[in-house]
Image (cartoon, rainbow, N blue to C red):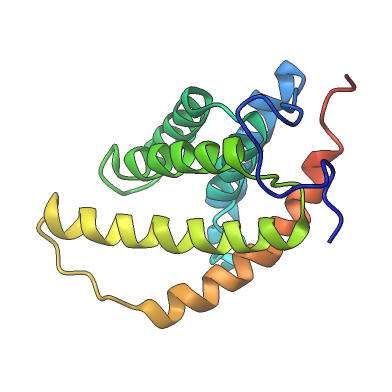
Length: 176
């Protein structure tokens, strides 16, 4: 396996921190949220794609900053909440935690490998779904079904979409 630094583990100071132009932090999350809203309306077969989650994971992994991951997840999650019929804060809390943990992984591991990105996209999709399920039960006193089989299937599909999206977003990195 060819890693950019020759190692999979990184220390806090090893490896480059990705820099993006300012418009990327505004336009890409906005497009992801609009994708999430309008795809469900016009293309229900693609409603399994959790585009805002994938953007949170990508930006958090590449920034390598837990504070940046928290802010990215919170802002995207709350924006998604405001456009959905769900109670305000559900996606905000989930995506905040995903952003923090993804940034923590980005600090310690080289995440430029496609296989690692596939695995992390899958893991964070399952983590997001599980956290949302727990919050529905505990905070909203609802009894949602524990549908782990669809979570696994949609997690795998989101991982494939995420790998493609991450490849595209890599091209938006600012030249150092």
